[in-house]
Length: 114
Image (cartoon, rainbow, N blue to C red; front, side, top):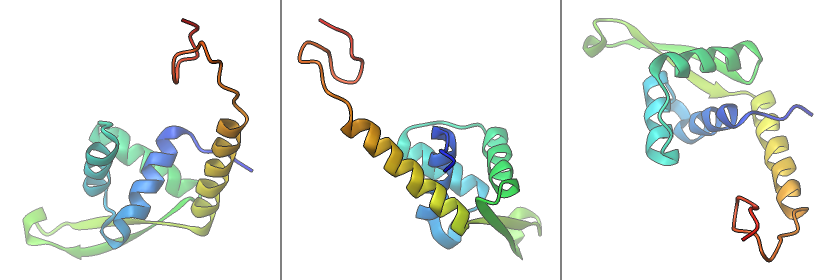
């Protein structure tokens, strides 16, 4: 079982949520709107390409569009491997949260004793 980084989870979840409309800019915009996390365009595409290289995502090229100067968009979709990695990571994270015994004197999420 390979656990995903937070960045990988967010990207894969954005692709999953966007379905057939998951191209780079839409993925980046969805992450910012949903998670409140800003990613640079370069970081978004580099990370998406890494996920393609590891078999977590597939790609397809759409039709050229006039608003893009005749260039086509590259769309991303979750593979079975990516879906399994997301689920494995979700389960492992849930088990970690369940195994955490809260300190009644700790502040939420930080664990700092007050």
